[in-house]
Image 1 (cartoon, one colour):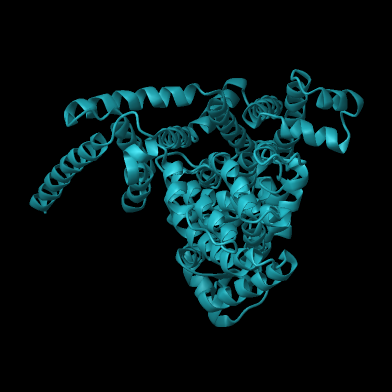
Image 2 (cartoon, one colour):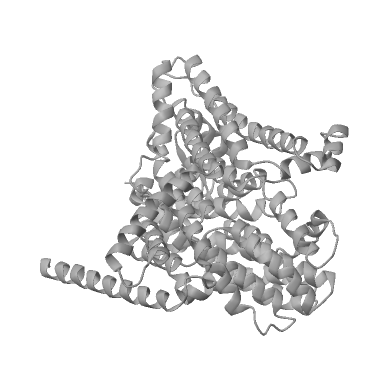
Length: 601
């Protein structure tokens, strides 16, 4: 056995050295001053491909991302055939890149607010708020079916930001779904599916500013002065993936049918006596390990007040941040609007669109932390103990911060290497009119999956898509459909990508193993995307309207779920009713009851 390991290690080293020599030779064939996509060619795909492949093979995210970043830096640093020198330089550049990524105000804001929310969640658990909330929700979410529906509804309620959704809904519903033996993988899927897909089509969200500005600028390139917000509203019915994935989540919850790895995860969760048999989180403490302080008065308000402060504080912070940005800017029309009607529908929309979500969420999370600490002290916790628990909560998020830093670093390197430009260049030629919306959706998905960012993909493709669509068919409805392909495809690719920050945050918020979340979710996302392509975007290219294709898509999704899916019985057939400290079985066959008792024993 030891000899086999040595052989594998030696073979890996030899292959790696040969690969580095081959890479160096290929890159140095092209002049250094040539376009990046031309210089690196197909090798521009290597860093994200290596990171994604290693993540699935090794089932370890941090090292996989590290290697992907290192490969990208090596490509940038390669000089002649000096492999050793280039490798050393690439390591040094990797360190510089991570520091630069951490120094970015947006990135540091996201990491800081994630840490603070981790502290809030810990304090809520120690105050007994999580337990009380779980018991209260269990009264209306007392079966796996109802619990999943309630989770989706909560996800729809936190529509204004995808990060906030992942970090609020996951921890809130995790104890409820754990008690009902619904897998963490299914919870993570519901949370992820109601994050970016909802924020991307919400008319009041942190996404709207970017989307509207990209649309407006792209139309200016074809000398069309349009309302970017008006075009955005027109794209909503054609955002087929966003709409269908939300409906598909509800469909799986209602039917309790699952397929692929999710089916196995759900079966295992239903059979397990404890979630600890099912869930593993990457080397960090889990929130569900936290028990309330002995003797503390358990109340639902111990959860609702901190979480409510976080949600309401976020909305207020979004508005105020956007308001100050507008008033400090040079757009006289917007300034006049905010002076005249600051709390009108349009005023609120413009303020939210102009806000910096990383700053606003950090402000809200800090306020929620302060409120939680004050509550903990009022509930007879010692101040130093409350601070200690708050810090312990932040420790659970450290691994997520590491993953985010590496994922962002990889995204920056991919941009420098021209990966997106290369993909667009090889896919955009010889485009028939009817297939363009579909092709744009697919290209957007590929780039977003490879880069882990829907924002970046939208920024890259929108300026190319609208002029191209107008040149092929100067019809506004056709251009709107193609525009929706960029927005919807970017979210699909981001939804699947293991290096996406929203995917990572959804895993963290639900305490689900990250790669287990990716592996179970990707089957569902691809299934919905295939229906999106064949039933929605291809017909849309022929001019068939959305109110025809969406109902047909629902029928196809249901038929596919019936064919490929298997009903996960247990919880619903036994009609499990959760009370605060017990499970009561009202009806069910004796055989099923005996089986359940055997499992629990």
